[in-house]
Picture 1 (cartoon, helix red, strand yellow):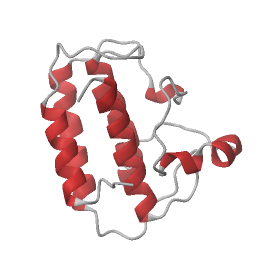
Picture 2 (cartoon, rainbow, N blue to C red):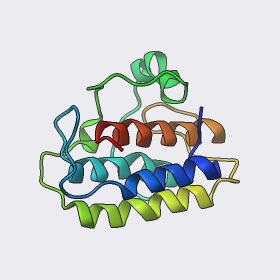
Picture 3 (cartoon, rainbow, N blue to C red):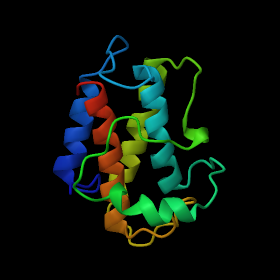
Length: 147
């Protein structure tokens, strides 16, 4: 499984983001591209401890979903998302991409960090698992928009 902490995977994600624009259409799901870019900031903010999303611990999530966050099996379309990481509000793609890109850069810059906080819903992750989860999440949504 690729990781946002690996140089090639990091560069790949950045290049794929550059193929998006405010007119890019979703291949599935309810989000438009601005909402997706806003949504993708959430897991990075959680990992980087930049923002609190008031997500509660979930033993069901730990038991049934946690391992799928960092394994090689692709996610299904339309998976459930924490309410605080969803929006129905319009989000400006250009503004949101200017917020997402530095979060990806900061994540990669911290690639040698060994100790990370526990995830508020899923609990403890190793550094490797955090990196894989971030890559998998970004990859999933980039595929959603054909990137």
